[in-house]
Image (cartoon, rainbow, N blue to C red):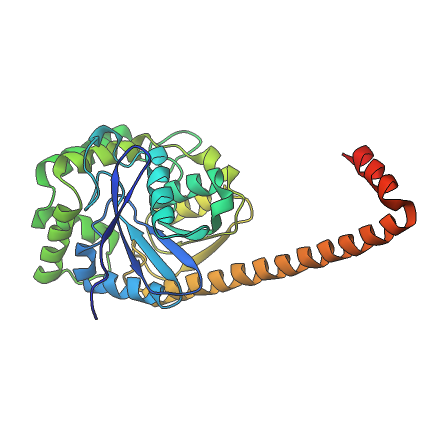
Length: 323
């Protein structure tokens, strides 16, 4: 299978955002990675490449590297992965591919970004799919799921010292995919992926942004259909379920397993849930469009009859009183 052509979108501030398009399905699905990515190198990771192809089988899948990561511009590391800038990244990519409205798929802190975009631009958002969402980085009395400052600092120091090494890859994967067999080949691929996605400095800057994030009020402001999922045995399952509950009307689905990533283990089940959700949202939109068309037609017919009764001048006066 030939590799898709990598292209660049340009944001309002001149930042170049790398993106790829896979598939030609009936709905645009924007995949916002958590944390950091390299959408080109990611195609060489078999389990994730297969997951991407599965999503592209029922959508036009749009992948992008957020600023500060992967193949997008690395300038402005202090602002790397900032949510407001990330919104501009999504908007630029949507414009570049000619997409007026899309369904957004946010992975972990990609969920923060997609929720902010949906709350700010509901006219361009069909719906949301979230995997392992969380709404705040730091621990707080009213958010006991967050990490302590000491834990954040230890993680950041580890990134600055060991980013992209085999040992770092082993520690990271043992946490996010605890049921996986970590062969030397898997570890080497993961280490290369880390190095391709970010430098140690940019990884640490992004981690600080994650630490400082608090988007609970943003989650509460989302008004589009939302599906949230996570592995039932994952350490942060309760956090994901609580965070999803902040979104009005959201649906939460438990996926069997312990993995932190959706494209490992139960990836087929995850893809099936996304496909069914897309079909449900598209069906509901079609039903709403038909209902609105019926109301509009009935209103037009009624207006015509009323004009005949009172005349054009009387109709004009009636409209003026109404408005």
